[in-house]
Length: 531
Ligand SMILES: Cc1ncc(COP(=O)(O)O)c(C=O)c1O
Image 1 (cartoon, rainbow, N blue to C red):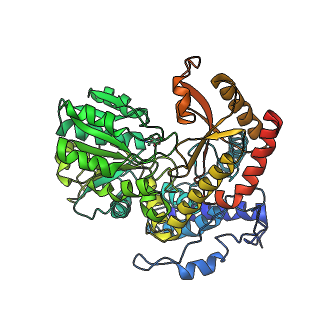
Image 2 (tube, protein in one colour):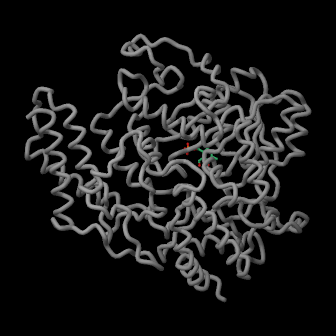
């Protein structure tokens, strides 16, 4: 069997499995579990029709639907069908290779059995893909990303060098340019690449910061991601934390006191903190930069994509995102809000000449092309080319443009967060942040109680009761004073942090599911706290 046959067999196997489950006339329009409307699935057109519509590289993609529905027992997964067709097409491009051995039927049978067991094991998870999962920062990858990733896995390209990932390196360069454009940076006037995570992307940013500002301190707020101090320790760079205000934003007075000491080389500015989506006032920090001369690293791992919807944000956050192009480096995680499978972070530098810090020789690679190998501008060696392919394909379907379907999805989550915040504010059993509504799409609230300990215990009980009802929230520890400013003076409350409830409403579907989410929350809350 040649390679092409092998591909076709795999494609056929995919089709067979698909039809075995749904029948050969499987109709891809199915009733939705959507609470308000009956959604038509985004993969409504038959695959043959999709094929004729298939856009060339230069064609504009068809407008993408705002909402997508994850597979469930009711809704068939579009990915196997999409994949089978594309896999065949990919196989055709390698059709002239000599035959290799096919998998033995017994091996295929064992594989099917092992996959059954795998599926069984994977059931031991929270349903991250479902709108009733509204806890941590977990957003399902778009089906186009899953399909493109799986398709590329047949090649398994390595974007370290063009020797290992020719097409996928080009796709990475294009996809990263799309991300940079979102922040107002155009090729070739920036340097950037994908990373395996936001942590590695931040590591590269702080590593470059340390090269540029040797011996100087890095500072970030107490609400900056915990990895910044750890990364700094790994890099042997001095790191200090400065206070956050009652909105979780870096306290500008505290920051300026540090800057006045004259030894701060870099400020980490978080646009979308992990705990509550707070947005540090980047615009104000840019003003401070003119006086104190430091680098700005914008950690927008979570919030970066909100740059596309300034009109949906309140004034301070809007101003911060508007200033993002002034940052010296930006991190954004396509595997958070960008609809990608894990393994997709992104680091961008405003000054492409920082590429000099990465300069190295590789005695094993970099031979097949004089073009830039991404390993030459990256600290990691092997990287998943499939991650780049998935991101590129997602951008084809959902371009990163204001007013586009991708931006509309973000705005829907943001509206859901504002809606949840106002419902909580009207419920006497809850205490929302005293500073007001969330800045992005993460809502935090404490449960009223006679003491901090009681509030914390109640939060845990409500959290558990919600989970029993399939509504998955998260817990977070935050200063009590952010909910009750007067409590700062109450000496009897020795514990500084209180356990609160937290909900990350990052799926577009959360907006339409909010009534259902609220209903489940109310029932759980009534069970645990009474009226
Ligand atoms: C603001 C921020 N920075 C960095 C990170 C780390 O990113 P990753 O989990 O991709 O390593 C996170 C993760 O939640 C984050 O929220």
